Length: 76
Image (cartoon, rainbow, N blue to C red; front, top):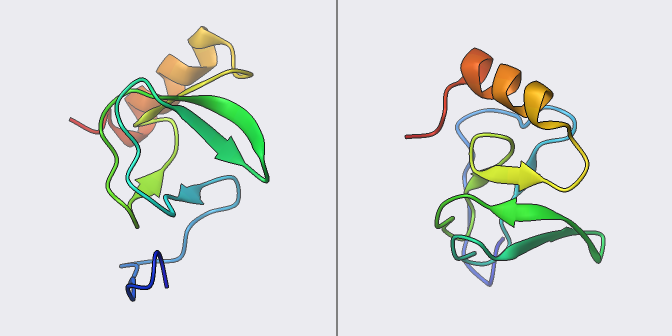
């Protein structure tokens, strides 16, 4: 359940991947366990998969982020 609505994922989320508990606007900080971990690079709907395709990490070097986006798609 996310915000009182049932969410069905098409597959298990890998370790380190996240699920948006609420809608997140592009540029807005993303929090995990109450700590900011990065900023949304696009609007993210409640219940959507959150990872490097739509999140710019505060911790991951850019070269790694771009490698991951190339490997998994840019999300566009």
